[in-house]
Length: 307
Ligand code: RIB
Ligand code: CA
View 1 (spheres, rainbow, N blue to C red):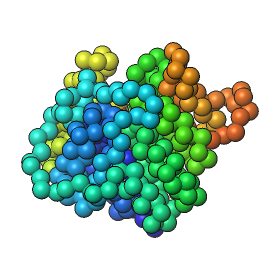
View 2: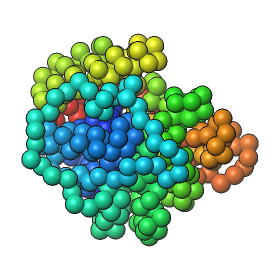
View 3: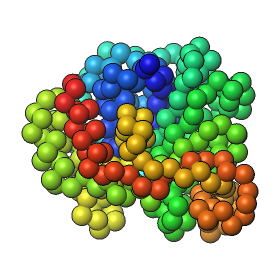
């Protein structure tokens, strides 16, 4: 049985590969793509999502979602993703139009009109939180929400906070306290899947349009990651969510209590993961604790080859 998914994203280099992977797998029914501001402004992330989906030949609705977070001021991540939000690859000018609905409405309609839908979120959680508030019945219809975000240990935007959560901590609080099944794929795991030169070379050998896009995007992504964080290669964060649907043994999850720090103090935006159950609080999230790195790159390679 195909898995119904709606992908909410902020392309973003790694989001673009998550779109590629979601559109590549015969066991995934990609109902639509909703877009949120995050790595860049909504105008840019939306344009990027539409370009990637169209370039890959994905016949799915792409809808523009929230431009600003629920409470805090807007952050963007130009240092990593560039002025366009997807520097490194030139897309042709396409005719395809955005879906007329708001991204939040696309999420609501997709979940209410299909059985057991999974929301995959690879950007800030603003659209998801707004959808839950506008249509609470989503919670009984949703299968689960899989997010790339947070971290069991340190952040990448402050010592405490990972970017997607830091962009809208209040939205993350709404999602993590909603009662829906949440799977959190955080930095503690995604920092293990680095797009090394060997990985880029391996994907380059596939020599199709998808590999061409992958190689050109990852070249810029890595250059920016090296400049910003001094790492040997960038972590390919977002596709880990989709890959864990393709192979449910890929990631080891641990059920635990996770509380989002919305105190507006030095740890604002932190995902406080109670790994050792100190607080004996209700377990509200499945937190990724490990990933099969070799299998991950096999899944990425299979996805690129399918185009
Ligand atoms: O912290 C990494 C996350 O922030 C990824 O989703 C990346 O695309 C950015 O949105
Ligand atoms: Ca993202």
